[in-house]
Image 1 (spheres, rainbow, N blue to C red):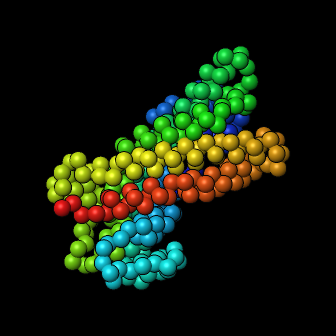
Image 2: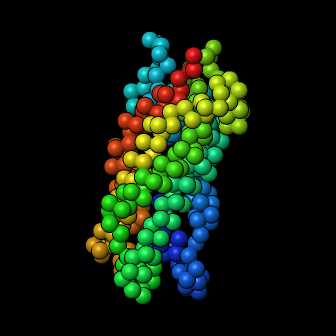
Image 3: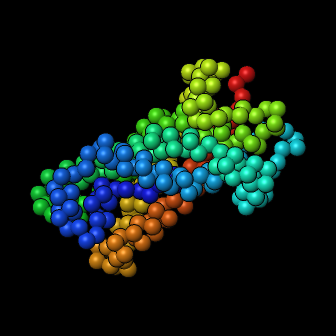
Length: 283
């Protein structure tokens, strides 16, 4: 969940010193396919930086059923242990190809569909009120509607991306298994093909229920709280007129940081269940 959140007006707000392009963009709203691509590309960039945290998260969540299993005391202990035993590429960056695929499936749908739904709601409200202002300027959408939009976009994205999520969990956790039990996947394609051949097509969606539940909770909290926090910070005046100080990036950073904390707390129980189900061997 590392990619920055892009709302309906975020695609046009952060275009400094480009008034002609900004004016043109506001008149011609960005379509859903373009939003999906932008979300996926930005998510890949974030995944490149944050993937080691994903590996640490997965390895701390799973249990391999052995009494002598490595038990990490904290995130730092996990990071140093993984690096010492498996190195950077095979350890902290294990499964990076699955993380990229996950961004194209889950990340693009989650953020792209949410921003599309939000803009559509703003347009509908603008038509009802007859407000001629620039789209997104004062078109307030209720918190409950934002929660529903986040749940819908997160649920759709997570179901589509479950195979990539499954591959990510297994590839990230492989180095924690005893050598004799490791699956030794070469890439995300190799992982998915082997799961299909060895376990069946349906197992590609193993753990889909907690995955969808986690994504619905995470996305609804993350996106709705981000939207609400941004509006509150804009009204506070601490980030300049309409939150445009520093081209709007400080405001977006603060809003997403606050939202990420509460969303992670709410979704973590589902995340643990998902990781353990997807890592288990099929008997």
